[in-house]
Structures are given as structure tokens and as C-alpha cells.
Amino acid sequence: MSRLSVAARQRRRTGARQPPLGNRRARSLEAKTLRREHLLAAAQRLLRELPFDAITVAGVARQANLAKASAYTYFATREALFLALLARELMQWMDALRHRLDGGAADAASLARHLAASLAQAPTLRALLARLHSTLETNVPAPDLLWFKRFLAQFLADGAALVERAVPALRGRGEQVLLVTHALLIGIGQLAEPAPKVATVLRSDPELHARLRVEFEPMLRMVLETLLSAWCADAKKGRKA
Image 1 (cartoon, one colour):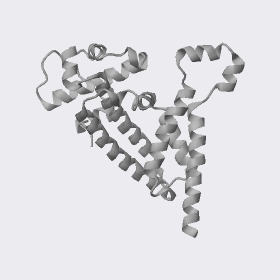
Image 2 (cartoon, one colour):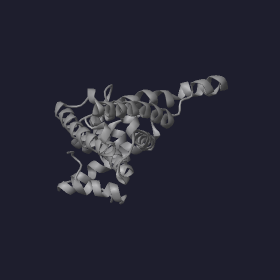
Image 3 (tube, rainbow, N blue to C red):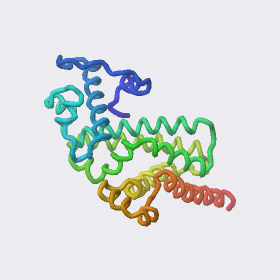
Image 4 (cartoon, one colour):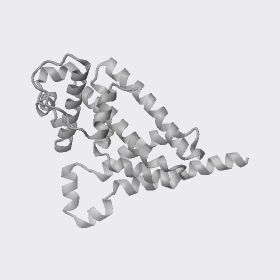
């Protein structure tokens, strides 16, 4: 489904420390996968510390203790690198959501709660999804973009199945649930996490700050619960008709 190897996914799940890279050229598939994972981990660390526009491939390479030329061996552009990181973040989020829903059937309210809570705990995923259409997809080679779209199609199919198993009343709407969640994430995220200058201005006026402040998780949960409850109610009416 993705370019992440089984070994790389296992390292991510177990939290195993990545070994030093050294200066030797990567020749084996395992060595190449390790370097790719180091670059993705370095990009994630930098994204937590710097604005996206301040991050360069050279900076990511330095953070990963690799040469700039080596980084370009794995990713043709900065956006291609972060598109790969987004794919990894989506997989991690799906694993977290699956774990939350393992308890059995859920209703619209509990699904909305799990969706909102799991996304609130995934800041890197939120930051990258907010840039997906405007930035990340606009400066990558066509093969990378095609790979990501195929990955996304499979991701949506897997996610839809998970949603529909959790809430059978949403059968046939699983992909819509994920797509709407994506759209809400972007809009609510921009309100809840304004640019530093905007945040500073709002904090300077307590009244404005109180009126315009938006909390990401509660707002997303409320909107999703309203929508999902309506869809479940429609499904129930359809069964009675």
C-alpha cells in the first residue's frame, strides 16, 4: 500500500532507536530504507521547531546526518519528502484510531469523539494535511504524485471499512466521513491555531481573544457528532421506509 517497508513500520511501532548512519553509501534495501526513515524523522523534528517555509532539503539532510545529495537520492523535492511523511503520519493515525475502536460497535457520538481526540494528538498530521492541496501536491514529480494518490485511495478504502464496522449505520458513507473530517480539520485548525502574529494580537485584547478563540478538539467533535448523528438518523429512516 505504501513505500514504507515492514521493517520500518515495525521500528516505528516499537519505538526502537535508529542506529547511526555512518558515511558509507547505502547499497542494501535495508540500508536505503533506514536512510529514508532517518530523513522522514528529521523532517518531522524540524516541522515541530520551524515554519514549513523555513525548512529545506539541505536542512533536513543535516538534521539526519546525511549529505544534501544523498537526501535528493530519496526525494526529488522538499514537497516530495513531506508528502512521504504525510503518508507515514496517516498510517500512524489509522493505527491509533483502529486501536481506539477495537472495543466494538460505536455510535455517532463516540466515533466523533475518537476522531477528534486522535487528530488532536497528531499535530504533524494536521499541519501536513492543511498544506496537502495548496503546497505538497504542487511541486512533486508526477510518479510521486501518482504513488501518493494510489496510496490515498487505498487508505480511504481501509479507513471507510474501519468506520463502517464501528458504526454500521454509516455503511456506504465511510469515505465521506473521512473526507469531511479532512475538510473540517483544515478549517477548524486554521481558526484554532492562527499564525503567530495573529495569536499575539488576539492575546493583547482579552475580550477579542475570548470571543474568537476556538478549541480544536471540542469544535471538531461537536461538528462531527452533529453530522454523523444526522447520517445515522437518515439510515434508520431508510430502513423503516
